[in-house]
Length: 116
Image (cartoon, helix red, strand yellow):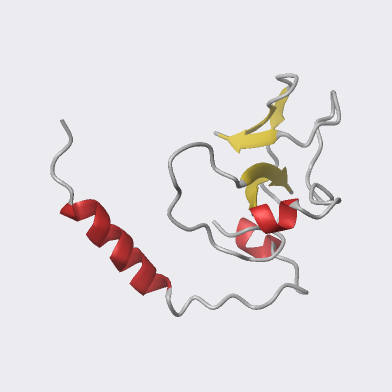
């Protein structure tokens, strides 16, 4: 899933917590890349909790849940799909190298022996 602001794709994560942040926009889960988080208004455009106003929301199994206060509500699925959420002012995504990135990631994973 790309960053909803700039369209950047996540790369293979390093161990530990991800620097990407989750949010909800138009009742769809979105991600915000570390670069866009440096902007002082990175949460602008994200849905907010009706109970506490937080933007720390997750959308799963047809519900939107606030990670700060626990308030939940049903997600309305009439809005745009997540792929439509990247603003038109963002640079167009170049997915030409995506298949090579996926092949390289699969190669790294499949070379490892069975877990255990």
